[in-house]
Image (cartoon, rainbow, N blue to C red; front, side):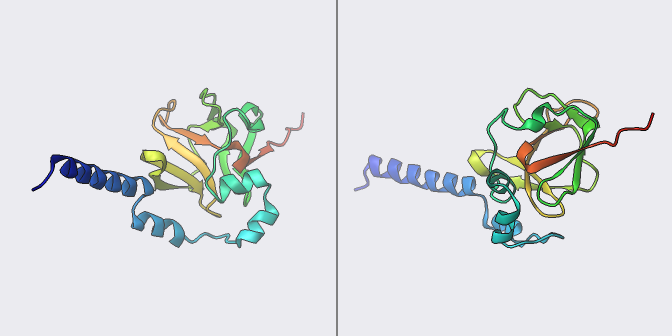
Length: 170
């Protein structure tokens, strides 16, 4: 005799397992992240020696800084925002805008310097962005930004360094 409680428990358990598998991402996605090759590759020890603990957590472990904690959030000078891991120019100050999210936001990266990967962590489907040269995690891109692109690159400021534009001679 088959009890209704056993049936419901079994169905709920199978649903929970499939949901957990979706939250973790597929094995193909995990393999893609591990299989990516970048121009600059270093050992974990080399990255730890080069980066601050906060930069390491963001760039190498895909962490996130607390909203409002990056000094680059209030950076309004002309210049370029580059990867803190390899110094590749990623965003021009001309594309930075105030999103109100607590993270530096840009509507467009410097062409060809930012890569994208599907991210299914925390039960959501998002697009992660990373430095195309060293693979450092930068943040995510969303489709709620301003014109002309309509995109919002929500970037962890501690994964960036700012290089001010040279003062023009007067």
